[in-house]
Structures are given as C-alpha cells and as structure tokens.
Image 1 (cartoon, rainbow, N blue to C red):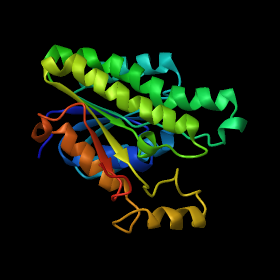
Image 2: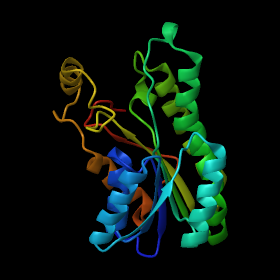
Image 3: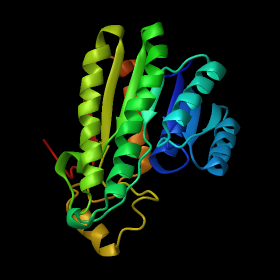
Image 4: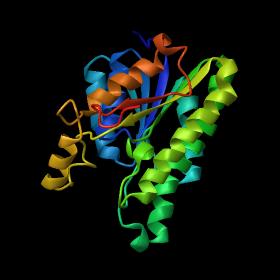
Length: 247
C-alpha cells in the first residue's frame, strides 16, 4: 500500500490522531502538509518526518478562521503543486449539559468541527477535480453515531460530518474522488486524558476488545482509505471503536 507521489494535507496535525495520521501518510510515501495552531509542535513533527526520510511542510492554521483556511490552502497548493488527500481532523470539545450550554460554546464546536471541514474541502476539491483523483477523509466520532450526555454540541458536529461525508461522496464520485469518514471510539489522546478514572473504567467495560484505542489505530484506517486499495469505498463510515458500537 503506497502513497508515493501523493500530497496530503492534515488539519489538527500537531497532536493526537492528526499527528499519527501525518506520520503514517508520510511513512506510506506521501508528502504531507501539516496544519494546526501549534507552530512549535508542527515544527517538531516536520523534523521527525524528515528524519525518517519523509517529506512534510508546516502550515500554521486556525480552522475556525475562514480567511486563514483560504490562505493556507492556496499556499499549500502553490508550494506542493496539488492536494490529493485531505484529512479533516481538527476538532475541539466544550462539554456541558444542554440546559447550561452557552451559545458561544455551541457555535465554537460546530464551527471548528463541522464548518471547517466544509470550508477545507471546498478549498481542496478544485485540485482533486482537475486531476480526477482524490481522497477526502473526515474524522468523526462514535458519539456522532450514538450521542453522549454533556456533549450535545460535539455529538451534533460529528453527526453532521457523517452527513457531509455522504453528500460529498455523491457529488464527486464520478471524478474518481472518494469521501469517507472514520469514527473513533475511546482513543488515548490529549483530548481524552482529562477524563476521570471512573469515566475511563466505565468506558472500558463497554469495549469488547477490552482496551482503549491508540491514535495509530485510527491512522492505519485513514492511510487505507487514502490508498488505491480503497478505490471502491465511498460514503462510508469506518468505525474504529473496539466494538463499543456495532451495527
């Protein structure tokens, strides 16, 4: 499974799942544009990929800013020539019970997790249409499939990503462009590290495989969906949750 000659752009690439995706795509042969707010972490990631013989380029980006998205994608395409693979991974949480949730926290999560994916895809799609090949991979969540108390904003944004994925898949399939989503379950990242021990133990009881997932578990699936081996898969949501949700 090789991605040699392909150019990928990963949002939210400075840590967690995004970082693992960038490393895996680079190891598979793709040149990778890594985009996130954390410039220092991006620089370290570029250095790590380069040290392993890969190619990576850092692009500071806050996906909540539409103008930054437009500028970043123009710069990436200008510098790298094209974008073959887009991984919409950037995401945040602002957890609170619905009755206490502030409108600002609702808007912030929807803008970062869902609207940014629409905007990033819109900027990348021209390059893919031109070459009649592309892979769009949206990182959703098991909670976008089953909901989660205290995460109405997050669950809504991730469920919206699933609908967006299917709509895009139907729009661009005739041009050999696929659009799929991965739905991670409980993955050990900086975002989940703040959860209480009680929450983690309860989560483990709901996972038939009996372990928490790793960012690499997700990255492996993303690399597969980005490859030619997945050319007949589109509009699909690939669950990576250890059996936490089935069906």
